[in-house]
Image (spheres, rainbow, N blue to C red):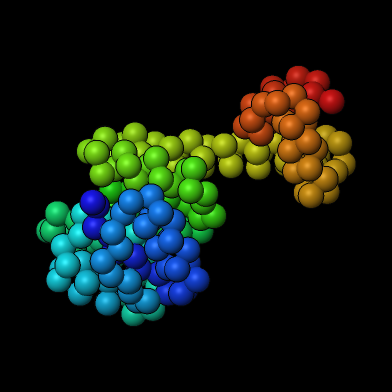
Length: 185
C-alpha cells in the first residue's frame, strides 16, 4: 500500500483528497495545513508520495519539495496555478509531477499510479504541458473570435465549447481550426 502525506491549507481539499486516495487503496499517513508541518511529516513518516499545494502558510509547496528532495518521497504539486514559470520552478525544486486543480479522480488517480510505478516523470509532467498548450490555444482562439466576430470573451468561450460538443471533438482541436481560419460554424 502506497503511503501518502497530504499538505493543503484548505481542510476541505485535504478531506476530499484523503477520501479519494483511501478509496483508491492509498494509505494517508499524515495531513498538514502548512508547509512547515508538511516538511516535518514527510521527514518523520517517509511516505512514498506527498501531495502538496503550492500556496500555503509559512512555507510554500516548492520550498517543501526542495527541503525534502534528499528523501525518497516523491512530491506532487497540486495547485490552481498553472503558469509555465511555476512549472519550471517546480521541476528545478525536484517536484515529481505538477497537477492542476480542479481535478477529477479519473485524471489524478492514473497519474499517481504512474508515478508510484516509476513511469518517467517527463511523461507525467508532459500532460501538464499539454494542458497548458491547450489553454493557450483556446485563449488565442477566443481572442481571434473576439476580434474577428466581435464577440465578448464569454461568447467566444461558449462558441468554442459548443462547437467542440457538437462535433464531438476537443476544445483544443476546435481552437486549432479557428486559428487556421477554417469555417467551424
